[in-house]
Length: 448
Image 1 (tube, helix red, strand yellow):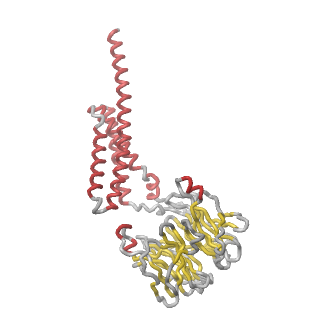
Image 2: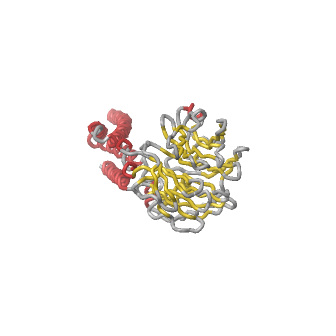
Image 3: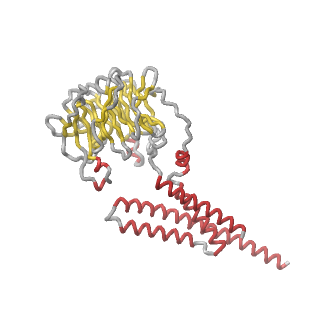
């Protein structure tokens, strides 16, 4: 009886932890960056090659910083409140920057500010549109950007009615122009030609390709399709547009058939000659040319493909191929006690399934020893799995995304059920063997 009581206490504790983990998962903010400190995913080199601007997380708050390359000194540029500031870019004169400001729902507005005068930032777009990428014109007077209606950005992929288009805004007068009306599925990494006549961006059309859009002609076309025949990402032109830097999946990672690894490449636009500059077997992003040196600054994600992206800032000399880290004095992390951060450490994607298996495993032990119904918890788990699967099938056409989520839950429950069944079977075999040995000992004693 004492063993049964201890077993019931253990079951109760695990059940409480299981319910608490489910409640925490449902009600807590699951943003992996909520407590993160480290570099964001964008950087830009100043026209004089003396500074870079980048975004940096401090305990989950993403702000814009500038760093002096000569000594690594870092200074905070923006002070976000209930928003995140990211993807900064220097103006051609180096006195101003643009960046994107993300609200609580992830909708990004376009912001513009002077970092020389320290003036307050100017919000150029409202929260009715989601801006995904932006770029200065060569004279710095116009900002081009790609935007999607916010209501469509917030909808699941299958329910969107409007896509992305190109826009421009005059920084002095706030005059807006809509340049396209194509509702594109995806447009990213916008840049402007050195003479200001052509916009470049990537778009998916069978492959992720670079598109050229002459502003006057308003007719888009693939850029150098005879040279660029495979997926490319993060394109960035040198100032004279003679060299294109971009990232692409390495050949060895494509041949492996598993995880693609993205390295940095250069292409001479006149000849199409390509060179690979990195060999990290990770993911390289955000290349940015220096203006007076044959160097490129970029970010490398050594923990690719983890969702919480950890970046290291580096440079590469594209004549010698020498790679060096960018030494920056990042903000020191304070050791403020954060109970929610500690809870996040314990409640992860494995916690709830692990507690589920432990709970039903303990129930199997209890039902076996107390009621001789060793497989009853397994049957209950199987019924729960079947119910979730049937519900996912019933709502498939009404709400496909919810159906997919429930089907995934059913798959996890099925896996847990199999493990509980295996445990119950093994445990039953072990206890039956022990019971048989005990009976043999008792028989031997009686004979004596």
